[in-house]
Length: 422
Ligand code: LRH
Ligand code: MN
Image 1 (cartoon, rainbow, N blue to C red):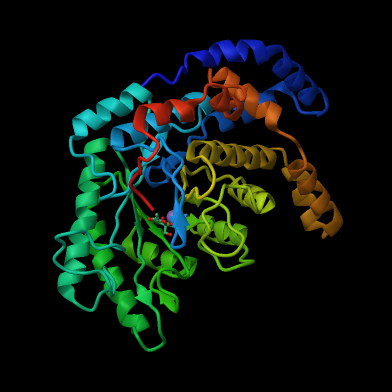
Image 2 (cartoon, rainbow, N blue to C red):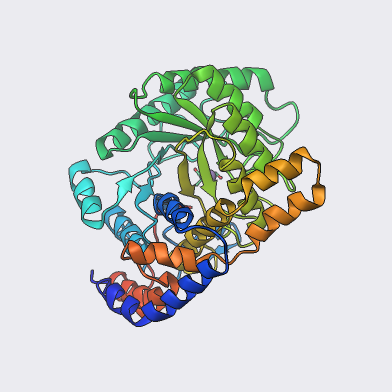
């Protein structure tokens, strides 16, 4: 499949003088030293965001799904799509697989395909929220928390198998999200369900290679609408603490009730050394899985402000978890990655000493002025400079369209192909 990505350098050439002018005026307007900018460029260049294998096709809701054509038909084509994103913006260097939607039958071959595109394998995801054909026990009433030990054992073995698939690909983490819960009061005993989940997770934890992490993802509701066993950061932190040093909490931005202060949760989990990573997306109401930064960009900035707080340097799992109901999946993902980099860059511009002093002096007005002057900074020339240095596209989205990559994919794969996933 030729996506004309070699055209990136040519296209950059014609846009270079414009970029240089923007980059020069961007720096001239701010009293930061060159070494400060180089430090920012170093930190931001290292940001690699894992693309979810289940979000390379068009998503939908129970009310409908409107495929846009050219969707990847298999894992090789999904890796190619992530490779195209990475070539365009330089920040999508890994893919996060969901099992069994993306079983890597021939791991050597899949690793070879990924190497060709310069793509690594981030966390693998288990799935005990759907019944697979010829599955012995149903997950209708749960999986790791199920009242029936045989169902729990089946779910434990699935997660262990997911770890084995990940090991064969070089992944270093498993994300466990459980839909387990109840739709009605009285339907489930909260304590027994939690203790069964912990016991099941301990069996999975015991199967982790020493250099692996287990990311425990929480969610307040859906598909269960009264209670969820791992419903919030508290339950996730309790489990991660009881499981051991390789277990962490995973923060999916859409898994919070309206108006939850997510940046404070990030601060708490980080303080405990139990923040493992993120599923970035955005939402107005529920787990809407919308484009990152499309609804609450200020919240995203505040989350990065917390992530940069203090001295602890810890690597987090940076992943997107979105569903594209009306946008081209690749355009949506390019916008999401851009929004994450923008929030991170703006947070790096916050004068932390001045903020510290204003906070200690209870100068409430100045605290807001200091953080919002960073948030109101258009950092796009800085991010373009980083892409330019990485030989990615200065303007990924407009080039994606100019190269008519979607049309090429439709010609190659067909207008009606449907990718596995949600
Ligand atoms: C659950 C979730 C989880 C994935 C699924 C695709 O809502 O966020 O991370 O397994 O989406
Ligand atoms: Mn998620």
